[in-house]
Length: 94
Image 1: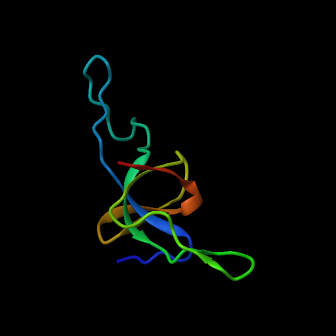
Image 2: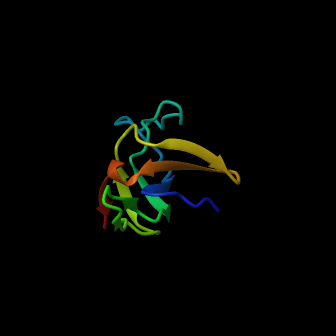
Image 3: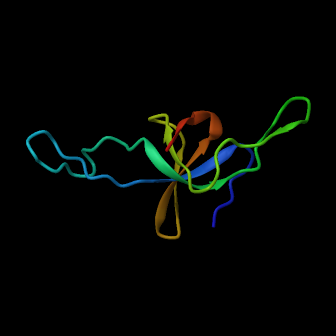
């Protein structure tokens, strides 16, 4: 499995079928990029200028909301993941 470094978080986007008001199912390339994902792995946290380490505020298994164009898409073991910095996470979805 991938292990993120520093304040990075690995997300797995939750696939959602997008349907228009008229009931037409959109092709995957016409859909908007999802903004919610499940946290798969979390780094150790970021290090401040004074050397102090700040623990991450999310944990594995959390569902989070993230910035629309944040992160880098990575393919690993036949799955697609998104690697983002913790600052690009907007909220934890309960």
